[in-house]
Length: 266
Ligand code: PEP
Image (cartoon, rainbow, N blue to C red; front, top):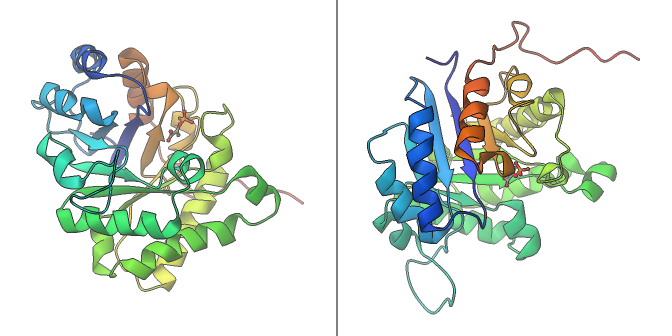
């Protein structure tokens, strides 16, 4: 049993086609067992969702999801993939608004909100990513950006919808760069997000994962902060042994008794 509920989410990005996903699952299953209070989520490329769901089907603690979906169920959207299509092959989740979608593919806050709402309507869990770029952080605009991104979601969701939403705080400057936010940095932004949701009438406690260069060496110290409900991991989730080790180390993290931040002097 973990000390608190924790989610470990693997974003494989454009890695692991069908054969590689099956081989991953076979090894991964020998390295992990279900643990009460712990959820293991996988976001493989769309073509591998079916095979991975099938391979993991004996493990109720493991859910598979899409990396991206369209908000419409069908239509003339070349290259698009809809929620009914991914659920048909086993997806129970979808990532929404990953920074690579926002910054490489120009996805807007409004589109992110539409996808989130479509996921909720269809009954799958959206894991919605927010986070600032390096320029925004250096310009002192982190809070403004996060509030804007959350604001677009607030504009399209009812207070009750938030019961089924999971958020990920992923500072863009920390994704795939080897730089990660300190545990206190991450905890502070998680608190900011919760305060903003509370101010806007969201009463439920929305789980928030942290993502950005999490690895097996830093996961335990990040998860000492009670503000983090888990981690979203790219690069370090790509090998079954490495991902299992990260999950194991993170699961053993002890919440700091103070629950708060390190004292900064000066
Ligand atoms: C991600 O893709 O969501 C991510 C956090 O990547 P990485 O762990 O490689 O920084």
